[in-house]
Length: 357
Ligand code: ZN
Ligand code: ZN
Image (cartoon, rainbow, N blue to C red; front, top):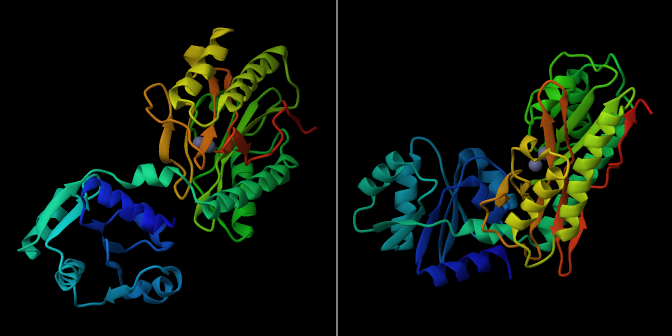
């Protein structure tokens, strides 16, 4: 079944006769359009992609499953959307409640007399969690690029090099490969590595630092998200103990992931491993998240998650321990749920690495 067929099936299930899609992440997922501006009008027997003249050519190339309609100045987007809705003859129209602002709703309502406008619950997140083989292949490519990037940058890591140097080298490698960053590179060392989402600074790497690198590539619209932590110069017993426990937690979680498992239980497993040596209180964030066209795609692996693992989902698994004044360790891989367990998509080495090696 195509994603379009899956959306229509969900609309029937929820009694939604027609919908105006406005969330670009949902629109990109459904249509393949990678630009920044567009709308989709969809019912059981009609579908139309709307954009403006900046994207006429691109939409014509990328949007395969529905006709493209576009407008240009002096027409406004509100007038254009309203005219398309009238043309398609919708008497009732749902919109994405979690995405449309009240101001947009008011503007549309004023132009759509005779059309009943209704808010719709989010029908896309659950669908987007299950990836098609094509989507999985794109994430796999993005993971391959991240692995190659780590291999490249690990050769340059040594005392005296700055966090900023490392972060720029990662960015250059990915962009020079013709792809985009999935998000801003995190490259944090020493005490700075105790900030899970810290920013690279001009701080030089020093012997005894943990250096945490968290980055990802976006290939054909799909993301990878990997974290590796290395030690600079020389590892002490303390480095080995902390790193070893994070790796133990991560391996235990990956091992437990299979269809039917509860995301919250996998998260609890990591915390139990940290608890063995009193580190649980230093693990403040969730274990992982869904991964797809967005880095933080639908799906959460944390204590309050209701998500159940199913074949076709892609998850990050990223336990971490952050000790203020000392440093932090995080290890993150991406894995797709298969019929029997998981396939790990990131393959950069994760035994404790001391660099330069
Ligand atoms: Zn990450
Ligand atoms: Zn992540």
